[in-house]
Amino acid sequence: MNFSQPIIDPFDYVVFGGTGDLARRKLLPALYLRDLDGQLPETSRIVGSARTDMTGEGFRELVEASLREFIADKLDPEVLARFLARLHYVSVDAKAARGWPELATLLSDEPRQIRVFYLATAPELYGPIADNIHAHGLQTPETRIVLEKPIGHDLASARAINDRVGAVFEERNIFRIDHYLGKETVQNLLVLRFANSLFEPVWNHNGIDHVQITVAETVGVEDRGGYYDHTGALRDMIQNHLMQLLCLVAMEPPATLDREEVRDEKIKVLKSLAPISRDDIATKSVRGQYRAGAIKGGPVKSYAEEKDIAPGSTTETFAALKVEVRNWRWAGVPFYLRTGKRMPEKVSEIVIQFKPVPYWIFPTGSDHAMPNRLVIRVQPDEHIRLHLWTKEPGPGGLRLRNAPLNLSFAETFKNNHMPDAYERLLMDVVRGNATLFMRRDEVEAAWEWTESILDAWKSAGDRPKLYTAGTWGPSEAVAMIVRDGRTWFDEQAGYGAGD
Image (tube, rainbow, N blue to C red; front, side):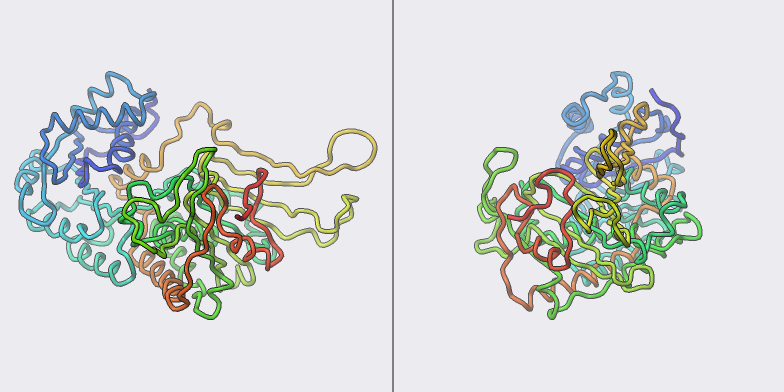
């Protein structure tokens, strides 16, 4: 067992939606792993809460089954028994009074502990839950509330949620979570940029030709059809995950790592994004929808055939954008973003392509050799690779090869436990460290920019372009970047090809 992790102050973690998929797959396993590392104080408790009628023993059985399903190789009998003993369950109706007095009674046993209310629920319940927390006197000066994305469906609903939760909690105690910001590689992006003198002098329009950010999924909508059909790829992924990655790539150096200074620099990026209007929506965006195909050799049905999808749905399952950051550092440097479901590979990656050398003196048969690229793989197989030209060994003249300098986290830190994003973020909430969480103005600025695209798509009235499941999206996404004389990054054969 690794006790190098600092023990934090005692806490009560109340998970609304405690029997749901997110809690079972991510939140409760993450808390168990923090207990496994010896980070949870003895008196800390975890309280599951949902509308489902269930006993405490029934909840412990549910959690144990989830741990055995998702992290069976990490289970230690002694730690598992200790963790299960921390668990409690209270059935609560988020919109009514049922169950709240019982929750208040349970929490009153440890009034001095830090309280965290994690809302793993639908966004429309955020306001009622906050109201009930206040109405039943569950707040203390050390109470935090965690809001899962998405924060609303558009700018108006995001503001309504922020207003309602903000009427109960101070901004410093509201933690809007995007789990991508808890990933090791994403945090390493800050270290890479601001702790190494090698990159910062060329991290601008003088040294960088363009940036690509890809978040691809092999899964379809699964059992989320009813939700996803009213959401789409732009709202589900770009408005939050990809926007946050773009901010970390494009932000100016903060004076310190203070949470407000980091977030101040991120909001400047969001406010510098050029709106994508009706006039340029056709050249700067592509929206697609998957049709039947195959993923890793297995047949999959089309989006239109998925459960709970409306007939004739125009919801996009793929989106690609050409984005402009209008400031001095990034003038003329396009950011190409793409995300989609039913892609051939699950990958989240940032590619920084540098400008080519001004004159190529080597006999490679081409005057336009591949420029250097910095590839930051967020998931899976987290790594940072710098693709450089090198000479192949041997006599007989210069034979050049493009090869990567590879920092593989698994290899470099093989003896270290690599915490899941949720492990880190759940503990940051207890510490009160909001650096890796979104501030209200960030969320609203991202929605304001996203709505310019949604409005342009609606005005244009075009249906999404179809692409075969198991490919890298519509051919129009390839054409969008090829028009600029560029191509999607191809680390492996076929990566980036269109339909």
